[in-house]
Amino acid sequence: MTLTATSFDWVRQLVHRESAIVLQPGKEYLVEARLLPMAQQMGVAGVSELVEAVRNHPDPAKNRRIVEALTTNETSWFRDGDPFTGFTSTVLPQVLAARRPDERLQIWSAACSSGQEAYTIAMLLSDALPNAATRVSITATDLSRQMVERTRAGRFSQLEVNRGLPASMLVRHFTRAGNEWEISPTLRRMITASECNLAAPLPRLGPFDVVYLRNVLIYFDLPTKQGILTRVRQIMRPDGWLFLGAAETTLGVDDNWERVVLGRGSAYRPRKGA
Amino acid sequence: MTLQEAQPITTLLDTRTVQSIADEVWPSLVGDGEAFVPVPVPPPGDVVSAWVDIIGPWTGSVVVTCAPATAEALTESVLMTRPPTVVDAEDVADALGELANVLGGNIKSVLPGESRLGLPQMGVAPPHGRLDDVRSLVGQWRGNFLTITVQGAAPAPHAERDEVPL
Amino acid sequence: MRALVIDDSRAMRRIVGTILTGFGYEVREAGDGRLALDVLEEGYVPDLCCIDWNMPVMDGLQFVMAVRANPAYRQVTLMMVTTESETGQIVKALAAGAHEYLIKPFTADALRDKLALLGLLPEEVSA
Image (tube, rainbow over all chains, first blue to last red; front, side, top):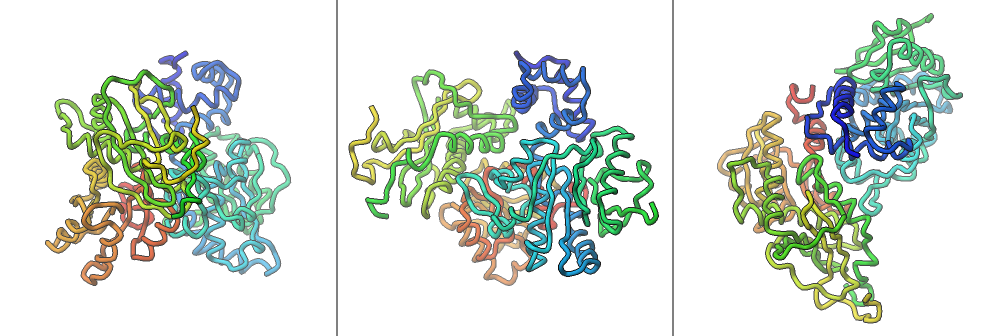
């Protein structure tokens, strides 16, 4: 069964609202092809049925999966470079100075998708610290089990490694595996990946020195955003750092954060006494 | 390159890998949302081919074959032309050749050892060697017959003769 | 900003050229490394060269070495854009003086990401 006009229109509006990406009329086949695996996984007959199900039972998690399926090529390595420049220039030196040499730094990639963000952090750390593998641990979580498994595997397609990964890092940290590229075992061991629903009570994690929570809040309503930010703050160090997506902020959502300008970007820190 | 080490392409390259390479090449070169679909359709009476040679521990060609009209439509899609612009024979050789080149380069990278890639050629596909040294994907693009064939050079660079499938 | 797109395939020159023009680049094209050196010698010294590897007459690696050997072209950023994708080939190109490496097939987004890494993406495009 082919995609109905109303289903296509609903998907179009959702994707535009959440990602500002415009799906032109005529891209029905693209929606069909990209959402079919999700429909099959949910056990519904086709993509129109999938859309019907999500419309009748609104679920931000499923909305996010739909948007991600249609914007998959948006996952790049140094996506919005600023959070990574700020990390190496300001955040990492400060955090290292504040901890004892035998204390392990804990970093959280809170919506890790297929792992690019977590591995970008791992590559930066291994370039900056000779003992990165023992000094730092990175926790990568995602709502989707499939994404968690992809992160664990650390294998990326040609098109994925083409997205903003410097060639010098590609040849230093990856080896060819068929027509895919596999991250080095040393970097993979720095990362622990698990499933986690940010909109529900969190498992025992942390305490984190640095949290990357990018392009997640945009999918939720205000009370859910507040809930997420509160739970994240509870498992962060009082002097920790939070990076949000370029279009996201805590301002007007949760007053318990302080915005810090880092180069061309910004980060957030728990407000003292909050 | 030694004769003993030369293995047929069927042991070096599986269908899934060729398909996954095509899955990446079509959207980026032919156009957003375009795909090579591995569902065979009847072959046309007349076909043209573009290919690149791979020279190394395994030596052969990566060949793209389709009807002349399909080659023209592919070229229009690659070049993003709109009517009334028409593509000429040189455009077709160039665009289909680049398609073979990008497929060939990616296929070369999954083969063992160091190999060299030739420049694209267009015309009647070169003859292939042993049947077990051919990995062919028969399928379609926009409903039109198209094949991607990775074939050993004739004569085959290895001597075993008892594995030829019927 | 100025770019020189070097590829023996007209189709590929058109694809890369169209993307770069969309980013606000002035674009010139050359069909092989030798012709590209001619363009540089004429005085068109671009900010960026996008360079295919396998070309007749002079290949992309030889072009990179020739440009790197001439101090007059020190400001030119060199990016390989090629279907050659073995680790050894990428290392060879970087060692010869290429600044970045984009593997074919690629998308317009991938080219944009590489330009952003190189600091060669106009501000209004990166926003």
